[in-house]
Length: 583
Image 1 (cartoon, one colour):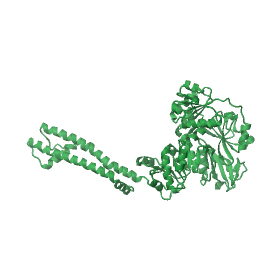
Image 2 (cartoon, rainbow, N blue to C red):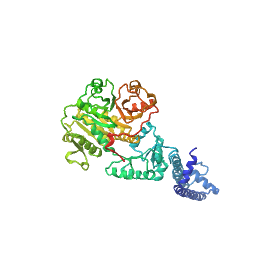
Image 3 (cartoon, rainbow, N blue to C red):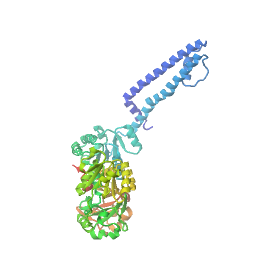
Image 4 (cartoon, helix red, strand yellow):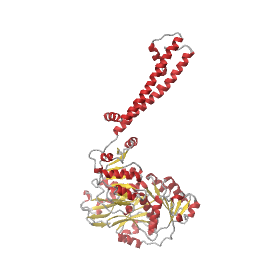
């Protein structure tokens, strides 16, 4: 009942559709009335032929009872002509009263009423007092991946949806939507863009430009992050008013390339918090396979902190008894000098150079190739479509599921194959194929949908990165000013102010790792950063903690220390630096 006034107002507001419906309804009722009058006249004519006399209203009465198939039987024809006429009237009633009339009621009354009721329920402006919220220009897989993160960080948001039906479906799913158009200035005013913390545009490049330009006209200061697929868009979108451009294809290509087993170069830096660096290294490359974390003596020999390792999609925190296995991606933290000492101490003989096989020469495949070239790796493409190839000398055209094609690309001798198709089904199919033919090869795969990450790992992929997850982490990092860094799929490094409960508490007595699963890899005190602090380090109110752990560990930390909030001030993020530009 609380929506009744708004529903009536919505019906009154839609004057043009209602006028059209009323005209059609009048035509239908006039046709029905004319038909009843005609049947009533014919009724009396046939009754007189049979010698029966009836009241003038009896014709209308008989016509309605016959058309509605009630058939009381108190007035009947005796002749064959009369019975034929009765059948005609009954068939007409079936069409007009039992078929067209319900359809007319639903079309002209019930459906408009329900649509008006849905529109009345639909928010058409942001709630009063809403501040520091995120506004999305569209709802798609990236938006769906970012929203749970915002809810996790207790950040309000709104999704602009122009279609009432789509908005209603999202509203029923619990998504906070607002009926509005990204290219309409009024929608941005009603969404309170001037009080928003960030606008996120994740549509195609051309709609993104329109939305960004319109939003910028309404707010000169609100940050706007936009995704860009084509290279020219990275120049056009800033002209339209975007402050951050995310080239997700480049970011995904860089990540996939980082996972390739290195030769004499062991560590890949993925992010930094001032002088504190976070790096990845494949266990195969650094000669640690078969040792436990305790036996590796990394802290004693290099000063580095071993955070954990990824193996076939499962993150293993660095407990003393963790066995470092072949194919494990190690995550380590320390200073630049400590990482250089790590490379020297764990140097291995160079691996004979063999080209990396990249399946798919689309945007992600080409971005991966560029990153590999920068890292000093040769590569070969396997591609079905000849028009996609920009490097014919390095491209083998054919089906990647054909062994002869893969043999020409050097698959039987390669150490690594990277699957970059946007079709998850194809990547799962090819993962099974590659693992069956080459049990020892390193398989790196892209996932378009996060739900397929686990399936790809089960199929045999060593490393997988999902497109929406990568985008969600990059956008959250933009929102939080760089205080959140995705180290790998499902592992975050983040910075928070020291919680009140930890003031004056030494690291050894804080039990942070035992209670939350997060490791302290750094402490910032003003301009000073204490890298990998020792057990005796005491936390002070002025300190900011740099923590790392799985998403579950991060959630436990925020639950254990409710006052803690991620997002204090900016840092440099190298893992997205090549793909994110900030004005």
